[in-house]
Amino acid sequence: MGSKYIVAYVLAAMLLIGGGVVWYSEHSAATEAARSVLTPEAKAYVHYLQLNDVTMKAAETYIKQTVTEINGKITNTGNRPVNSVEVFCSFRDAYGQLVLRQRSSIVRQGPAPLKPGETRTFRLAFDNLPDSWNNQMPQLVIAHIGFD
Image (tube, rainbow, N blue to C red):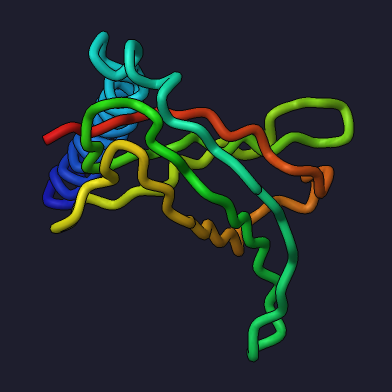
């Protein structure tokens, strides 16, 4: 009779763990979707942030791993200081299908905001790109703008 209880406890534990995994994945997706939407304030300001001189190159690390780097500049042509900016980097395959969408910070929250009229450089490094990626510049779309 003891082995029946053990099986029942194991099954109950597996159901709880499975339910927790499903809840977490749905909650994470909903949280990411909520973070993906620009606020009305950010939507109104997004055209004041310009990405310029964006280039891409591959570099090899000392452990023989390839890292793809995207370098560029962001300019704040508006009249407000900006504390943070994040972009979605969308990588595609040879057929134009999305193979990776990664959110990356190009202006980090810190002591000095990106002031009106100021230009800063940014560098994004990717070492986890899928083999199916077409090796073309990813699409960069502003995902978040943080104000003071």
